[in-house]
Image 1 (cartoon, rainbow, N blue to C red):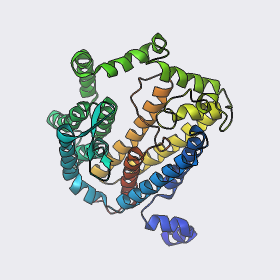
Image 2 (image 1 turned 90 degrees about the vertical axis):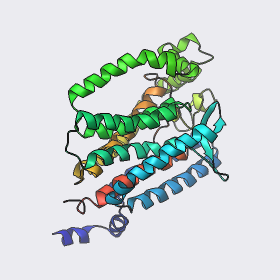
Image 3 (image 1 turned 45 degrees about the horizontal axis):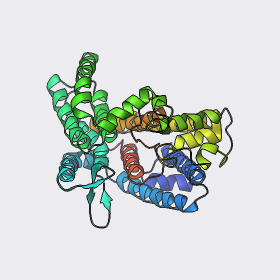
Image 4 (image 1 turned 60 degrees about the vertical axis):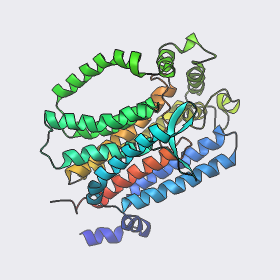
Length: 373
């Protein structure tokens, strides 16, 4: 039966499976990359160089995804503590000898390039939590939950000190999803929520920087400073609203083409898309993201090993967090924290990090039978 099914598959599908790449997930990601190039061309005012640079980044990302897909989940499990340790060590190095830019100390200067170690922790933190819980009886005990929280908190504190609250929250959420999927009890979740509420005033007065507080205040009332801190979100909401149902058409958005919209090729690229393609186009884009998420969760649900299941599930839900935070941010539902629209916004580090995560998912999918014990 399997031989008959294999013969029915086309040569490209068989080749992709031989390379341990999931054809459906790769197709969906390819559609997102294509949309990215179209919107970037418009957001850049017809600047083809912007698109070409993004294509180079996509090429690197696909190469990383292909490489990671060849690594078995068993090997990823063995390397998880070392990857986490190296990532935390680099964060400490950033605090000591890091390069400062735009008021934040987030990079290491490698001579030929600048490297942002916090991006590594978006994958290393959930890998470490999945490694710690993978061989233990689930759901986790209170002691195991506390150890997991320490694993999560250490990189978060180091990243917040840079300061980079947005990335710290993404790292924390990615690792927390691995803990949540391990079977965290409702009682502990409620207790954690209560502690978060208690810690909120402490965070406000003793941890958050002035610009971070201003972002929260701007989120609550952007019209209080329409030409200053509230300008970004006001222009973004104008762009999305002016798109209407069908949009103004590709390259016909007034907010983006006349440069009213800030950061239009990175954080606020969804605003450009919403203005040009309207409600219908935005819903189709969201549908595409839902299909990507559904495929990722399907892969996670079929993993035969606890480590692989926790890792794949946390990566899948982290992808959703990227999407939820970015769209919530540009539509005024969440504070602006500088999170790109996954696989669409212009950028290199975030695209490569996401591609590495998708490579892990494809590895889990390709090796699901081998992990059955």
